[in-house]
Image (cartoon, rainbow, N blue to C red; front, side, top):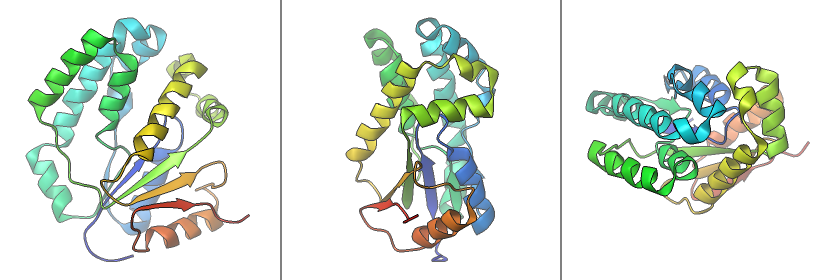
Length: 211
């Protein structure tokens, strides 16, 4: 890989394997690692049980968490070193737009603007695609109890929102991986992925190795 300092973001819908891939890449490249740490949100379990009642407070907690994760000190650290993250900051607005009612969303955006959240521009975004059925299977297999309340309709809505987000994305190079065809836990697939990431990616590219 080019030894210049970089900021790589791994993104995709719930259960697609963002954290697994980001952690593996961080170990491979000996980089810093920035994780979403969603499990610390005390309202998330309640949200999956009663989404309308707990959507706003759940998103507000994530907003506060982002303000800490992207403090000026942390941004300077990311700018000075090589970091890999398992989330893209725009995901917060994506989830808010798809979980909040119109009045809640307007209030959320007022707060979002007040926080003036900024993060370093990614040198590369890796978008992990998946079918909803695959996401359901992965969520079941990883066995987090409160995630079993996630509905197929909710997953479908979030999956569609991610597709729309990255279909229009042009802020930085974008590598799209169809996880139906790629298993990052397979050493051959992972080696091919590392080779792809190490290239000078420009624009939007797809990673679909021939089986």
